[in-house]
Amino acid sequence: MNTAEVVKNLVPLLGGVENIASATHCATRLRLVLHDDNKGDKVAIDQLDNVKGCFANAGQFQIIFGTGLVNEVYDEFMRVTQLEQRSKTEVNSIASQKQNIIQRCARTLSNIFVPIIPAIVASGLLMGLLGTLRTYNLVDSQSTLFVLLDIFSSSAFIILPILIGFTAAKEFGGNPYLGATLGGILTHPALTNAWSVAGGFETMQLLNFDIAMIGYQGTVFPVVLATWFMSVVEKNIRRVVPNALDIILTPFITVVLTGFVAMIFIGPAGRALGDGISWVLNVLYTHVGWFAGILFGGSYSAIVITGIHHSFHAIEAGLLTNPEIGINFLLPIWAMANVAQGGACLAVYFKTTNEKIKSIAVPSAVSSLLGITEAAIFGINLRFVKPFFAALAGGACGGGYVVFSKVGMTAVGLTGLPGMAIVQPNTLMHYIIGMVIAFVISFIISYTLKYSTENV
Image (spheres, rainbow, N blue to C red):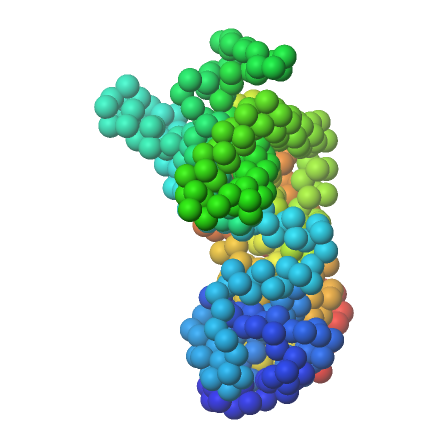
């Protein structure tokens, strides 16, 4: 690839250097914030050599080059444009100014939960493995090794409020260590563990307010809301406290004031919100059944286009940590939608004679099977429209099947083929069957429908 030639042709199609506010990149995409997105010529950019797709989403103008190539393009792009190098966090912050309130909320929740996903995935994988060994009596569940591993598997969920408090404070502009401290307050050992509350709990009074002495282990929304409040309090206190006393008074007042408000008001309200969302979803899952899977599986990819899907991590974590539910039944549905995009994308490979489309379609389809759908959705399926709708149909069918079969997962963040690692062992075969259904149906529909793939 002639990187210099690609960048030379790309910059004018973005409206020139003066229209580019900032730039960064991820593993596969050059991610730009433009002053005016309308000046970006998506059709012409798609025609450039080595460009696998182009789309605007979440306030960013994103150009797909693929792993490895994007690094070379970015380096040359920064050299030519002389833009100031910014981190992805800074670019996301600039891009968020172009988003509506719903997209901003979704992005905020994503920024809070994405850093935590490795911990939840590790715990979920270990939990699934131990569950398999226990189910088939392959180990002594009372042995020291098993007990220790069981402790390891549940630790991330027990201290989840502390992890959330840390990342949420960073997102809201507060001190992350005060956020972690607030999470520690909400999970203090002096409070009755949230998972054993059925055995009874104490209630104490303060200023005529009843305080239920129940911990918030495994909860999500209480600590998110409390940390937001804490960050606001911290910033306002810092404005009035003298600099010489800031390091002493600001954290002291912030922790004490926020702790009281969290225990009396925000904690119970956040718990009610999280429980309410989980209850509604569980009712749909239990009583509407496969139809809910069809509805969610058929609409998920359309939601991905808006960027709102980033907020789902919080809801999924709430399902996992709810003692009455304990499984993630949403992620298998999302997995079916992702796999379906791959099936529809691969069908385009067999339909087209355009060599550039062929070169994009196969890696994009494989990427979808691994849970990464941007290249398939924006580079292929949405470009020709009908394959995208074929994928929605495949996702709906696969989603209906996994809900009908009660497929559940023990973590968040993994879909497609990697998702098999966190599927509950007794439902793994149904998960695989669901993926086959989603892939095959979307492939057949995408291949059968009439549309042109040549003049692009």
